[in-house]
Length: 320
Length: 268
Image 1 (cartoon, rainbow over the protein chains, first blue to last red):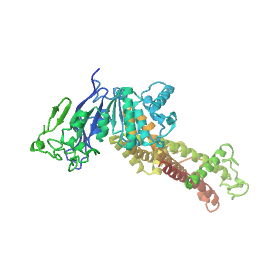
Image 2 (image 1 turned 120 degrees about the vertical axis):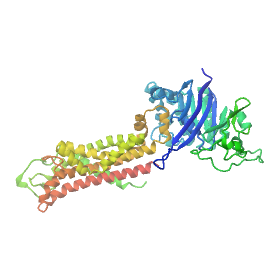
Image 3 (image 1 turned 180 degrees about the vertical axis):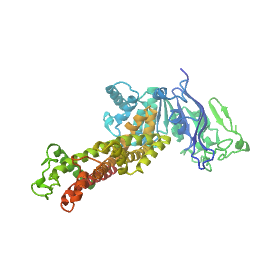
C-alpha cells in the first residue's frame, strides 16, 4: 500500500462571478489558487488560515462536493478528480466529511437513528435489522445511550449533535475524513471532548484526518503536519512541532503571535494592518505582500517559490 | 398556549361537511333525482327542510349529493396539483440554473392564464364532463404548488445536511424527497388546503356556466345555475347551495390559515 493516502497537485477552484455588464469578460473568484500537498496514511493533516482563505473549499473539493477548476486529486493512487456516477458513489464510502455547524448538518425532521442508518441504506449495506444494530453499537461507541436513536436533533445539545455528525461520517468505515472546523461552533468546554473523541476513533478505526480550522491551538493539538493557507495558497507547511515552535513565514509568525500566552505577558504581538485582499484580484507576486511587515520590492512582482528548511518544512517567502 | 381559532373553526366546518357527505353515501331523505311536479318550488318546511326545486326535487338531498361532487373534485384536483406541482417545484429549486428557468417560465405562463378560460378551452376540446373539469382545475393548480415547493428547496439545498447527504453518496431523487421534503412540507400542506377551496369554487363556477357536471347529477354550481330564473319566486333554491359553497371555501381557508399558524408556532 502507498505511504500517501491522498495527494493534491496544484488544485485550483475558481468561481465564476455574475457579469455586471453584458459584454464584460467574466471575472473569477480564486478561492483556491494552486494548492499541493500529500497526506500520509493514519496521520492528521492540519489546514489552518483565516476565514475566506479557501480552506473549506479545499476540503469540499476533495470530497467532490465541488468540481475543481484545475489540478489533480489522487486518492489511494487513483486520480479521482473527474470521476462520476457509480465509481464516485463507491468512492464516497472511503471519503467522508464533517461539517462545522452541527445545527445545520443534521436533518431536523429525522430521528438520530434514521440519520445514522441513512449512509448504510444509501449504499444498500446489509439487512434492516443488522443496520439497526450497527447504529446502536455506533451510538454506544461514542458514549450515547441507545434511547438517543429515537430522539430528534432538536433535543440534543451542540456537542451531542457534533458527536452524532462524526458518527454519521464513520458509518461507512471511511479511510479519510475531512473535518471542516468541527469544533468552531462549539463551547470551549465541549471542544476538548469532541477532539478527544476524534483522536480515540482515529486509533480505533485507523482513520486519516484532514483537520481544517482557524484555531491554532486546536490545530496544534490535533495535527501531525500543519499547512498554513493564505488567499488560496499554502504559504508554509511542515511537521506541526516545527511549524508551531519555529514559524518562518511572516504570516504564520503573526498568526502565532496572536495566541494569548499566560506565561509570557510581554510577548510581542504582530498586528497586521488591512484586510485580506480581494480574491477576485489577488496581488501579483506574493499574495501576502500587501500586509507583510517585511515587504520588499521583489515581493510585489515575483511569486516566491517554496523553499525547504530542515526536513519537511517548506516556506514560500522571499526572506529566505 | 393560545387557542388556534382558525384551526378549530376550519376543522369543525370540514368535519361537519365531511360527515354530511359521508351520510349522503348511504342515505338521503329523498332521492336527489326523483321529480315530483305537484311539490315543485315549495318553501322550506318540516317535510322538506330546505324546500324543493322547480321539478319538486328535495333540495337537502340534492345538496347532500352535491357535496360528494365537491369533495371529489377538490380531492382529485388538489392531488393532481400537489403531485405534479411538488415534483416540478422540487426539481426546479434543487437543480436551479437552466432547468429552473425553463420550468418556472412555463409555470409563470400558466399563472398568467385565467383558470376559467383554460377550463373552457380544455372542456371544449376534450368534452364536457366531471373528469375533464377536474383535470383542467388540477392542471391550473400546478403552478402555485410548484412555486411554494421551489422556494423551500432553494432555502434548504444549501444546508449542511443536504451536503452531507451528497457526500455520503445519496442520489438527487433521494435527497429531494427523503431528506428535504419533510422539511418543506408544511407550507405545501397549507397550500393544499387553500387549493381545495379554490377547486371547489372553480367547479361551482364551471358548473354554473354549464361546463362542469352534467345533469341530472347534482352539483352546487349547477343548482345555482338552475335556480337563477326562479330567484324571486324561490330564493331558498339559490341560497342553500350558495351557503354550502361559501361554507366549504371558508372552512378550508380557515383550516389552511390555522395550519400555517400551527406550523409557525411549532417550528421554533
